[in-house]
Amino acid sequence: MTETAELAVIGGSGLYALLEGATKHEVNTPYGPPSDPVTIAEVGGRRVAFLPRHGRDHRHPPHLIPYRANLWALRSLGVRQVIAPCAVGGLRPELGPGTFVVPDQLIDRTSGRTQTYYDRGAVHVSFADPYCPAGRRTLLDAAARREIPAVDGGTVVVVEGPRFSTRAESRWYASIGGTVVNMTGHPEAVLARELALCYTSIALVTDLDAGVETGASVTQEEVFRVFGENTDRLRALLLDAVAALPADRDCPCGRALDGITLPIPLP
Ligand SMILES: [Zn+2]
Image (cartoon, rainbow, N blue to C red):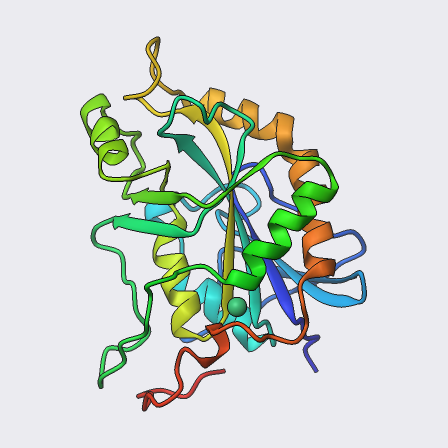
């Protein structure tokens, strides 16, 4: 019998492993295999799964991540709550490298990515509030306990990539209310909602986006360097948060599909 997990962390750039003493699980789904084998271990009495979004060796670029397989695989293992750290560019000058943001909104600027499981029937999930309120509270409290400054709320602009933004795009994202910019937050968030999973993001600012900073524009090397410097803080914060996440879900996420007739059975 396959081992099960209750909650999961989907690690982003720079976070390719999280759990010690974990068992490894090859999972398959109707959408193919996930980005990497899923590892499972116990943290603070909870069964926790970890999946590196890009694969351990970062082989999946943001526009080619098997998003549907990833969320489906986690749900099939029993996961109902997901915490999703990611690297972002800051769109506000005050959000310098090393700042953590727990976003409450997103704007989808991706194109050509499949963003639903339901290609038949009428399945229109509510997405007004894309992130789990209980998960957000838990992450913010965990950051406060460790005296790690974390910004409560913000809008993630998710771009197609893999290139970084032009200065004009970056200024425009800021002008329409964007706080940070990223390449993976969508469709991950909506696919989690379509499976009635709790989904909470924590964004680590690795650079100021092109329209905000004044010198040379962002480089991949700089992004990975800042992420590396903050990986230990992020890992500690994530382990605190998964142990503290309420097991009883009284948030709306688990009821996202109530009253909807699904064209396919969920795992
Ligand atoms: Zn929730």
